[in-house]
Length: 246
Image 1 (tube, rainbow, N blue to C red):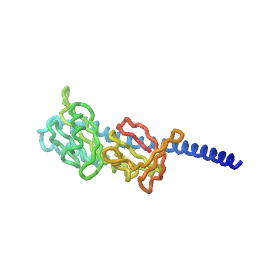
Image 2: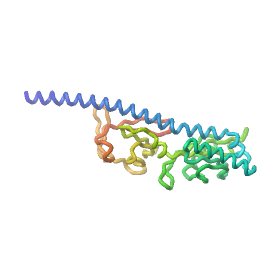
Image 3: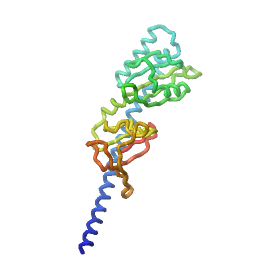
Image 4: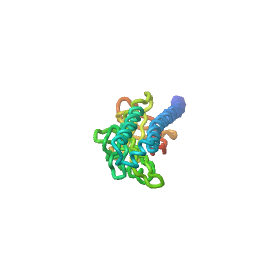
């Protein structure tokens, strides 16, 4: 009888534990969806800013006639500075095909990590890149081509975003949420102890993984503010080519 009682108790515990995992998974998926929307929306406004500026008449005039008077250059710089102040962009710049900065607000030279985005813009498409600068600040870049009428791209508008400032405005989440890039590196997170972990940056602090009733449980050493074991949830985020995790 004792064995039967224990077995029944374990069955009840197992069912309760699985139900708890199901509930936690649903809550985590909801938190993950909200965080993904927040990140996508936050980056989207800078993408739209790059496209908007590429068609702005003052910026366009400076791009197509870089040898015009200082007043034209000053007017383009004023436009960039005004919008940098309003949007919180780390920097805005107009860069000619040969790499010359024609107008800028913030940084005055094209960061090395933004080169791939600039090259894509010069091919006529919207360029996107992310990198870590020399000050260990995480950056996300959009580069929008400025076209010669009926011709190729003559310049590009570069919008540079500091990811840390984007994270700063997020509300406090009970779940630890992070976004990994194509290399498996955590580039965005609501937990600073996870930032730039994983992939080429070094292994995630996971010591063991367990599959229980279709749920992925991780044992880890990520710090005192992330409980272990933790339920791990992931989904693709094709808009920014990152993978959100919870």
